[in-house]
Length: 268
Picture 1 (tube, helix red, strand yellow):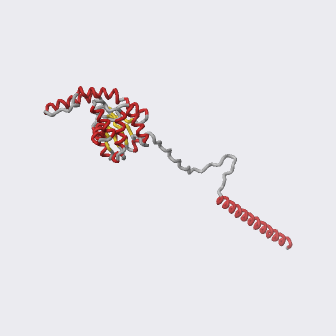
Picture 2: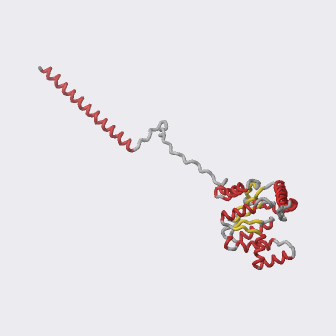
Picture 3: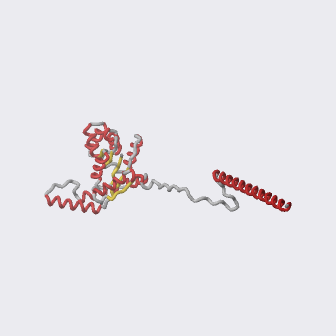
């Protein structure tokens, strides 16, 4: 199973990705983790990425795609993966399409977590207030202004991916503002065989039961009699004919007897 989760920062992609990993025994592929692993391993593409990052530049798409190509070729990724943080742009998505096609692979789904940006910003503001009140150290991204900037970047660069995958008929959307477990259940329904087949299966028409009513013969035509019926009918006709002939014979015998009596009477 090969999946992409889309959604702005704070939509809960990381949480849902971990649940998908546990449920389907696949791996989570994070571009940040893959870049660090490639650099630590000292691979050719990792060394190239390191020189670019050391110069303070953004790692170009071809390098990121090359790192992903190396990673999905590893044994633990053969069962499948869920991509986290990639693709971020339509060109990256197109490069991923080419990479998978070259290996005879394809994506099984692209799921977008739809959220309300205003509510996300309010959540961050509330969390910052609560953490500050407890004296906890804030993370760099625990800041409403930082989140606003990340949301703006997402709208400009990553949001168009939804249209890209929608045109391919691959995009499914889930209400990311629902409770966490409800979001998980909605994703599971999408990925289940029944969810995938929904709307494509057509109900089979019910088989017609054979009619028990006997067909009436058309006017002007004699009804066809089955072979057994015809034999019985001939037998009855034959019996009737014999009975009729016997009666006629008895009647003639009686008439001859009566005539003989009349002649004997006259002779006397």
